[in-house]
Figure 1 (cartoon, rainbow, N blue to C red):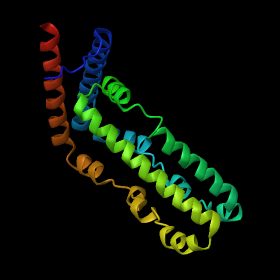
Figure 2: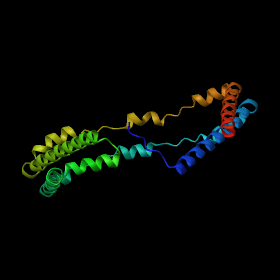
Figure 3: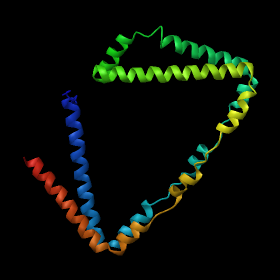
Figure 4: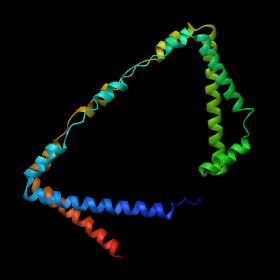
Length: 211
């Protein structure tokens, strides 16, 4: 079996210490919150009002819903854009056929990603095939764009359908306060459970550190 590469001892030590500190801080914070929920739940409510600020992502969603139209530029400069696409596709065809040393590429691919030679060979063949098919498609599109750009308009109008993200992202703009209300309604029970969980985590950490 292939040996899984390990992290350096320094990185492992830093990650372990960070994880332990995170659990300790979380356990202590859980104890404090549990005590407040049992004896002074109104303070938790006041802290929640201050901390539970709603940050809307609507302006980000509006930026995602803006259409960027490049088709008029390609039609206006169809000879220039077709020539550039032809040059790029020709270079890709040359680089992945005549200019590709498959044996050396498989060895380098397997070494860089730590893969078996057979798997690296299959992945490289798939990558080369997909790239060559994309280059051939680009050549056909550039020829249409160079000789008969009007033939691409029907295809462009059918394929350039705008799919808005507004409905998909709308649930992110809905405030959900049901959990806070439920916890405050059952503050004593929630505080006891939180204290038990925090004490359990701290006890495990103390036992592990002691050993």
